[in-house]
Amino acid sequence: MSGPAPIPIAVSPRQRAILERVVRRQTSPQRAVWRAKIVLAAASDPQDKNQQIAQRLHLARETVRCWRQRWANAQVALAAVEAASPDDQDLTDRVLALLTDEPRPGAPGVFTPEQIVQIVALACEAPAASGRPVSHWTVRELADEAVKRGIVEHISPRSVGRFLKSG
Image 1 (cartoon, rainbow, N blue to C red):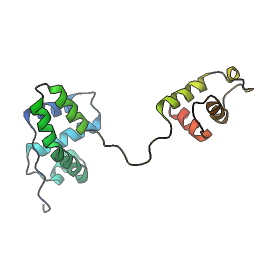
Image 2: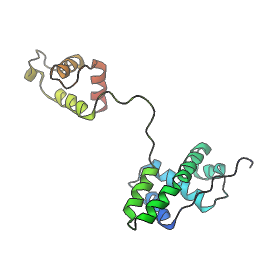
Image 3: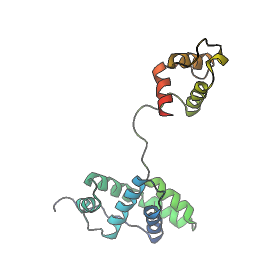
Image 4: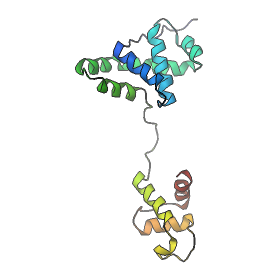
């Protein structure tokens, strides 16, 4: 197979133990398991190209390239944490953080989790307790009441509906 040489990565015995624990643990998120498998495969045979690892793990070549690159970029920081701390917890935290997604691009959320919880709690109250002449809440009534109570400055009925639907 032609193409650029694979990025060499190194995994220390302590790092390998942590990655293998992630792979074996039943409560590990699957995305972390796949990422740990990619790193372990790339470290076990540095000559394996991304395409070969991708075929073996049934993943996209770009996924393997991305996580191989990410591990390679973090090797110096991981080595520093490993050297500075004889305790595996710091290293485990760093490895797990490395296997998680980076923040997605886009605008930050408009409403805080606390505001969403307060709106959902409001929906659990009887409308009569708020002086509303209805027997059941509508999303428009909930939006108006949330603004009236000062939970939010303004909110659309559609946003209230999304919060209730996802909750």
